[in-house]
Length: 167
Image (tube, rainbow, N blue to C red; front, side):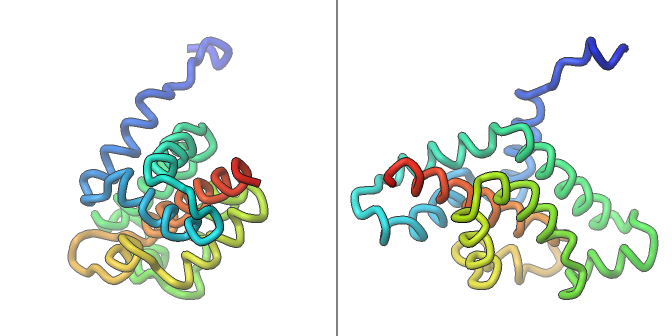
């Protein structure tokens, strides 16, 4: 197939990300809960449904799907011990000096939504609210090195969308 004839598989990409989240017991509503909790102090009239809509909207953006799929694939490969050493050990242990997981999520997901999203991501990466705490501390259920940062970045980006909507 010629590259000009390629049609981006938007629906399949979105479905693959959502299916992976669900395989890890993460629902869109879980991500939206993080967004809602983070933004309601600034937007008291915010409805939970608006946070869900913002998360879904962020997850449909191609750049977000692309970065999420890459991070998910790396976690899946690491779970199967398929990365070459020493990368396997670094990813499997979520080494603090690695930083590629944060770079992929912050630069490729939250970073495209501006400074508010970048600041939100830094806060969530440090504080680990909601499902993020579970993903960061769960052991023996696969590698989540990239997943926790992907979730934080999506929640941060959705928070930015809400902040701009109400500005």
